[in-house]
Image (cartoon, rainbow, N blue to C red):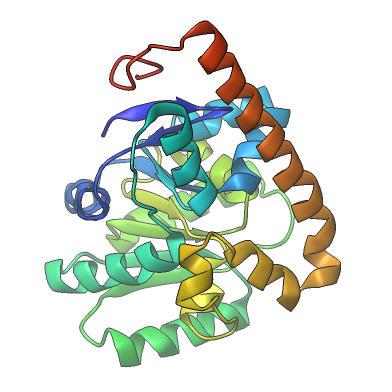
Length: 261
């Protein structure tokens, strides 16, 4: 899929169906690759870290999860890119994996969350093969432990590995496992608790209006206020800076020719 430079990261473009089918095609072949589900938080993390920026931009697919990223693509390049949110992508990939008989594996999250995930999938996707689930300890794994995890996942026969470690840990882990784990890794982060009903998702009108962040903030104000205050402000600064720079130095440039990979 085609990628476009967006402020501090690259973002893949295409239809929602194209994102889903591209991931599934690679999963059927058990290609060793990873998908990042990018939002404002990830973009700002990449702005602060060149190392993390390379990890995200080198992903095989980077979906525009947050509505603001879709707006930024339109504002800077005139590209009307549909949002590809992790909260939509996760259940759709599970459904299509069930239909295509692609085994899946869950890596990360607390044991209780994984237990509820398996219960949920047993009811919602009864014919889906879950080849394994593993909750790693909250510390850096040793080389021997990493090798054991790699063997566990590869031996399971999974074509899709859903990684639930949170940003930026899950993206760093996926990048470190590319070429070692023979499956498509997808960093789903907070999408899993929402899918199994542990957390609520914003109403549809808030999703369309790009206010899903506000809904999450109202749910967890003490944890998220500082993050949103800093990341959202920096994102707006970077966006308008890029917009002004483009209008001044490249006023007539075509979105088909600018900043494409």
